[in-house]
Length: 312
Image: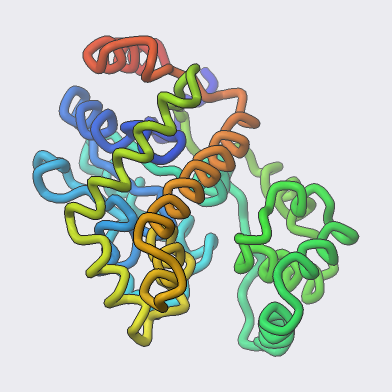
């Protein structure tokens, strides 16, 4: 039987503010699971409000892994994420629990689920250092166009805001002569590691999702987003925090260049754009079972989810 020897996992993915955390927690409570986070910013300590990191009340006693373990100034790669997440999944499975992968970072999710392997990192950082210097001097858009001439498939999936991934894709090619898209194709020949039932959350009415995003930003401000952002933007961990939506949009306000209302409107707009990019990424995966949060009550959503899981 296909998937007989594969570890059974559930995934709950989708755009920001779609309700992934609540659904994942209730899935875990229903089937005996533990959450494995798939968020590239929730891995960092102290970055709580801007990343919508769930608190103890939201976790409801369900263990959450791959979250809140890295100092904000530490580097972390997709390869490192996959390595650690796989160990978490194996540990959860060994304890007869079900791993529930939850988050919105498409690259982390796809690399983990599709069993993408990564070329070994080496100690020579000269190519990366050169690309990083060029990034600062020439900008991400120039490097993205360079990547497009080498690996259009990968370039089409990246936005100029994804500077780190652009640099990584170029570095991989210049070190190995293999493009990132080709590397992924080769690594997938090994086959999938998991028997995954994937649940995707979306809204038919895009404005419904956007209204939820706007309300989330307002709630973040109430919880202390301004204080958190100011602390990070003025600290040594600025490089990491500057990548997080919720901090960089507030910098012009702290610098006295725009009003708070303008900064918050920019934050809401950038978060909506991010949600659109997330959906574009996940929509390519035809294995995902999509449910629409504006077409049913939460109880109906949970019931349909558990039915899909039982069939899977």
